[in-house]
Amino acid sequence: MTMQEILEMKQKRAALVKEARGILDKAKGEKRDLTAEEEQQYDRIMADVDKRGKQIQREEQMAGIENELEQRGGRQTHQDPNAETGKQEQRNVHPRATEEYRSAFWRAQRAGRNALSAEQYDQLMHPEVRSLAVGTDSAGGYTVPDEFERQLVQELEDRNIMRGLATVISTSSGSREIPVEADKGSASWLDEEASYSESDAEFAQKVIGAHKLGRIMKVSEELLNDSAFNIESYVRNAFARSFAEAEEAAFVNGDGTGKPTGLFRDAETGPTAAGTDSITTDELIDLFHSLRRPYRRRATWMMADSTAKAIRKLKDANDQYIWQPGLQAGQADRILGRPLAISDNSPSMDTDNTPIAFGDYSYYWIADRQGRVMQRLDELYAANGQIGFRLRQRVDGKLILTEAVKLLKMASA
Image 1: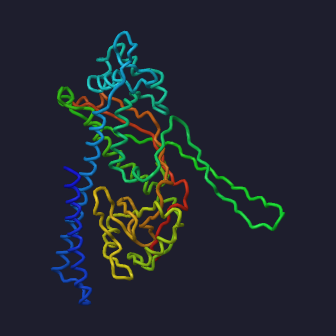
Image 2: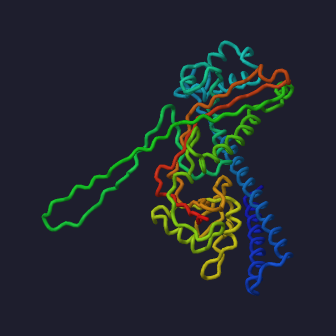
Image 3: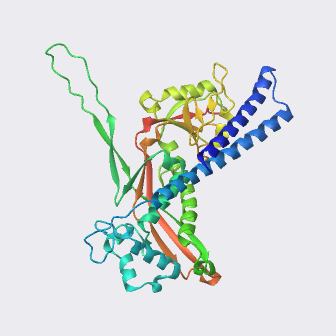
């Protein structure tokens, strides 16, 4: 699908939103509630809006992937004119980034360790590769090829809303200590020839470690032995789906016990709504202005889809809807002029909850430990004619600067 077709889909979605608004405006102008028929019509239109929104998101993701593959297909490799054998120069290339390592790795996954030649086994056990598998258990496994890991991370970014908003760093081992200004210091006005007062910034430390996330998937022996079966693509897609879901749940609302600490756990609480299960336009404006101006320039709203549904019906003092659908390809819907991100891992709009976050999520840091490890499990599912594959990764996430994100809190009962 072309970008022009995606744009036309967005325009049709915007037309549906306008139609739904017309239903609400008519009832409001007549100072009455929606009739049963109007309620059904409104819900049907909004269900179509949501369906089209998901379709647009899928098409945009696919367009991005296809563009990346097209660019990668056009890459040129450097030929070493001084190489006597005519092979391409591979100086300063990490072993797991080579085609030899990739070939040996997928040979081991498809046919098992015994199918490897001595040279292939040496490729997989290279010291530089094994050093990346920090914290692995005694069950073994091989560090995945560099290109596979890069593609897996790309798919995680496409499927996980937080990876597209946060700052993502890669670490080789150990914890990462990040200095954060706890007291910024201050300047003061001085009389002529008066001495300067000292006001040093004080720093605190935020520590990002690594939590292990893993999954086992099974593939039939018949499918695995089919030479037409693309095991690399199948495994990458299957693991990416499940890992992205688990990651987003933790990055958004994780409790920090055995998993990352979620955005909604560490952000500062802003204004409190008057209701226990409803929000007004004024309360959203209060939340907007509770965030300091420097953070508003890159701020994004985050909430669950059920909360977004309620906010779609809100208007400002000029009787204009504060929710604005994105019209351009790749453009998010907006509230009060700032983009909206939907994650159903956000708290619900209930008593004492904090269902809406507003802030600059680049201050949420995600630390990826390099060297994801995959292991083929030959015996565990042999009785069922299946081969298991276990993938594990280490990752952590934490809001480094809590004042960069504000939460709207619902009233107590």
